[in-house]
Image 1 (spheres, rainbow, N blue to C red):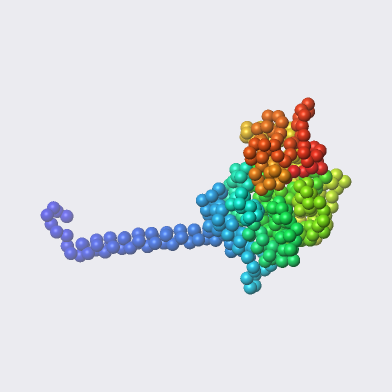
Image 2 (image 1 turned 90 degrees about the vertical axis):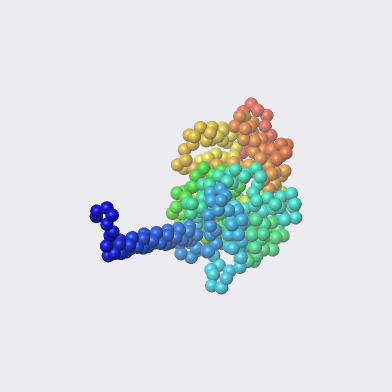
Length: 400
């Protein structure tokens, strides 16, 4: 068009209509993208919350700001929801059709009347190890965290195992005993992975759980299996058997060492035997067993969370060196059970700490938080004068 000439009215109208249509199209595209994005976010959240499993309980919290995306208050609330009485039509035990649920359980029981420890949310000296397991089993990978304190464990037993409540209240007098017994009830009720607070996680060991209904750690012939790390589908009879067996042990001397036999590894080992697992001549369980429709996996020492036995000082030193240099073979290991023994006299409730420097450099000592010797001192190298207040230095004295 020549300069100075006006456009015909029809041309201007067609141009305006074209611009209006273009704007409407862009607006529709933007609105569509927003709706698709919101649907995707909701779908992703639902996937994480449900674990992609039908019948999964509706207590999965949103991704939080803590280690591994976990939120401590939400983890406590999730445990409280599981411990609450069943609603009408709700099953007594949560089902999970896709194997062991991705639920990481943490237990810290301190008597509310103990003002020194009642406010703890985890053993003080174990904080970094606890965080390592939350990072390894993150919300982004589909894991959920449940935190079990005095109130939640009491509610769980009261609401779902009332026949066991009198024993739990009056015969399990120590915090470590309640912790031992609570883990059996928790795993029976909801399943998942329980880890002691002195276990350092190196990676997500889900690949070592796949295809099994119960996974635990076989240690040595005198003990059989430890209860420091157990993963299971919900509803397994072995956990009910443990709660039944412990009531037959009333009247035994309730001293420090007998915690192992009364509520700890020895009780768990006996429960496994009672439901049909066989121990070999060496005292160990077979790596894999199939009993009454349940598939069991007992990882041997040197794998899963137990690269070394507690008295194998040279092995533990080698693990420290390999870990520091980045040379640790992770194919058969998911972490390292440090075996601090925080339940031993003078180190109850996680106050005790492990002197890793002493263990790495020579003599080993487990000391109290104030730096004074407490609990036990592990065997020394040959040529060194060592002591062990618990007696002996061999496999009959497992410390966890």
